[in-house]
Length: 269
Image 1 (cartoon, rainbow, N blue to C red):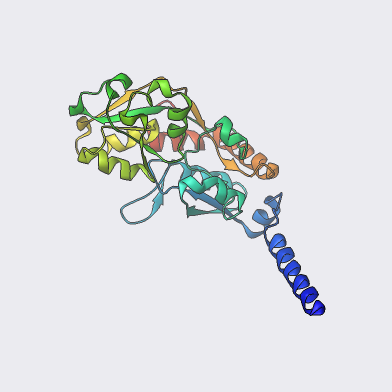
Image 2: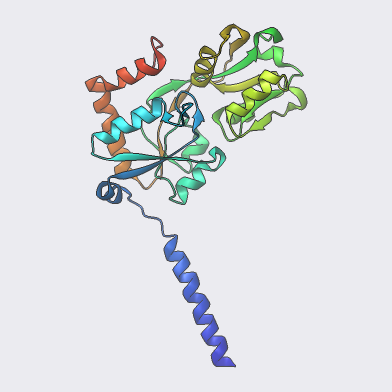
């Protein structure tokens, strides 16, 4: 009996040890990426105009073009993987993706667990409402229902500075959505009266509606935010390669062309 117990313990320890090895974190992904010529980028594929599906299913967007341009410099083809945005840092930590590149805002909270590239785009959080709701400021949302994407920078702003908007809205609690597409469905149906959302998304969405005048984009006073590429903090080589690539694209005019394609005359920092 003792021999059987000892044998069973040895087997259990072997299984646990093997599982631990399987979860070993590779601190430097660059050699593998360079060898396979593949890098996996996680994104929310409904986030216009950064990364989204066209009507034919084709993946398109500002960040798609930018990522492809950066890695083309190294002869590497990005693979884009749709993820649950609320699980993005977990996906990165578990190494199911190599990068978060999808209008990803730099925040102090995220910086505790994620490394960032240099910033490549300036963004603001704005309020989108229907024009006929007569909401012209954050103050006009008093008692009204607000929508926000789960785990978004807008949700973080809402919680971080509650006096600016959260304390005004109905029940002082927003309705959470997996995607902004779902939030707009409720806004258009009148189930919510406003969406706190990235300005890049708001501008693009409103511009491409059949009647843009049916919407109002309301500026607030949440601080401006930077978009950057998220990666594991141990991936310093990959971080350097992305930063160097962004510098090259800025210098050779590619970045300006991508900005012009997706934002037109809009000033992009």
